[in-house]
Length: 178
Image 1 (tube, rainbow, N blue to C red):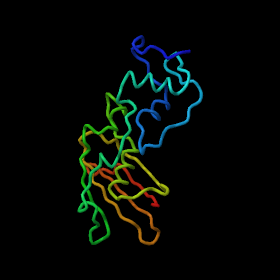
Image 2 (image 1 turned 45 degrees about the horizontal axis):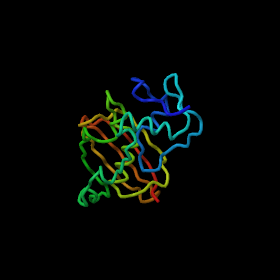
Image 3 (image 1 turned 180 degrees about the horizontal axis):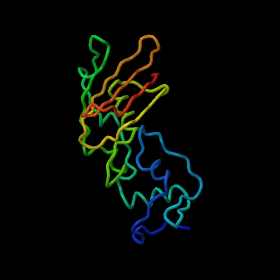
C-alpha cells in the first residue's frame, strides 16, 4: 500500500498510545521503534516513514523537536540555593509552550515530561534514575508554579516539590543525578 492521500481523510488520528508516544518528542531521543503497520482509523499505513510523511503533511508542527534549554530560561540567581540549601523558583507556564501542541489541542494539559525537562534545566543536571514521580494535579497554560528543590546531603537524592498558585501540590519528584 502506498502513502494515503491526506486530503481524502478529514479525521484520521493515530490510535491510543501511538499518538501519545509519537505526538511530540522530548529530549531528542524518544523515538519508539515501530515495525508493524500503524492503525489510523480503519485504515493502516504500512511502515513508519509513511506514517511520518502523512502526519507531517497534515500538521507540520506535529513532529517538531522540543529543545528544553531553549524553552526553560533560568538565571544564575534563580539557580542559587538559599541558606537552607533549597532552590526556590516561581514560574508561570507560558500558553505558547510547545508541549501543549499535541497534549491536547482543545484542552491543553502540561505533560509530565515537561516538568521533568523543566527540573533538569533549572538544576542543570541530568537524571541517573528517577526514584519517584507523582503528579497529583493538572497543570494548564498560565498557571503559576512554585518549584522547591533540595538535595539530600546523605543520600545524594534531589527532592522536588511543585505547587500551583493555590498552594496545591501538583508534582513531587525524587531522583539521583549523573
